[in-house]
Structure formats: structure tokens, C-alpha cells
Image (cartoon, rainbow, N blue to C red):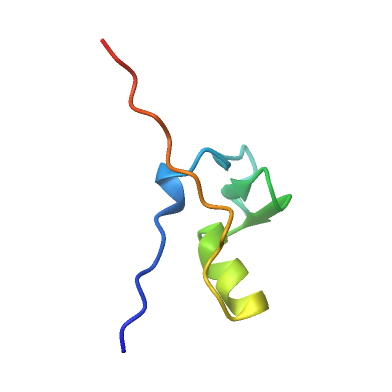
Length: 60
């Protein structure tokens, strides 16, 4: 059974921090880390993030 990993970069809550030591962040969980926040969430609760919301594509 393979687990599909979420790509935080496509989530509305993801952001890149100015902190070189902890470059990735999640606004929803108030997390900053070296790894993508979805990895931290999975390690903490043992399940994929259920709050993931994909960003809307900007219409040009």
C-alpha cells in the first residue's frame, strides 16, 4: 500500500520563510521546518493533512 504524499507547495497555507534554518512554513499549523510541513504533520499524527486546500490558478 503506497501513501500519496501531499505537495505543500500547492496548498494555500504553505509559505516560504526568511529563516534559512527553517525555510518552509504552514500558516494553518504555525509550523516552520527544514522539511515540507506535510512531512511534519504525517510524522506527528500518523495521517495525511486533512486541511490541505489546493491553490486556485490565476487567470490571465
